[in-house]
Image 1: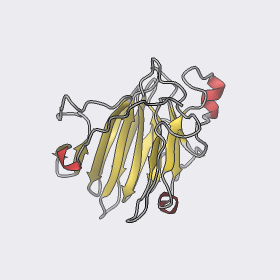
Image 2: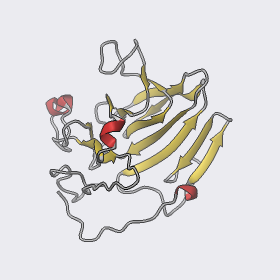
Image 3: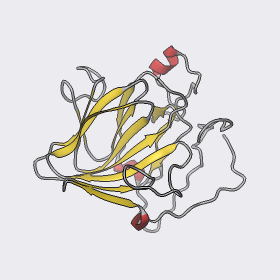
Image 4: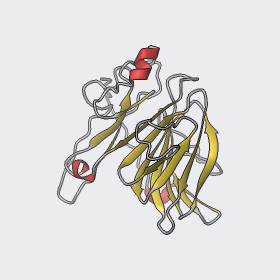
Length: 229
């Protein structure tokens, strides 16, 4: 695991983030520069490029659009979000219908944009808004094979400690096609990402203390030299 001799923590208050409303259906906060919001101090954090907190009203959402060369995932806080993309086929993991997956609290939906993928994210509920985080991470390299993963992480586990959600592909940037297909993460039980990036989540109740190892545990991030962490 890479070691930091000195880690500088930069305070980023929730109230100081970028904010926008779109057409009455989307309310969004931007931690980093995004769309019409720009702050030269906050453009990315290593390979973390986008951290948006979105609230989408019922029967609205993001229509089909394309991405490439980005690791993109949504983390649902409340409500439900319906995901469709150009990869989903009947029988694939997590699919609840022929061409969609409906996510609820605790679900993480992850897509490797790679050489190109089209997807949509819609709140198809008739009365309840959806509240979620959308996160983009810059991958190790371009033109990867598009991939799709979904996993659910319970609130009960998050009340006990930080729960790792995402960790680097164990085989690293030079993974073979077979290793890509196997999609083994550096931290078991997480979603593999093509980046030196580890994400966890916790629900910290009053009086409790959680600890978190920078870079994940058990050497999840092996080396940062010449890589964007």
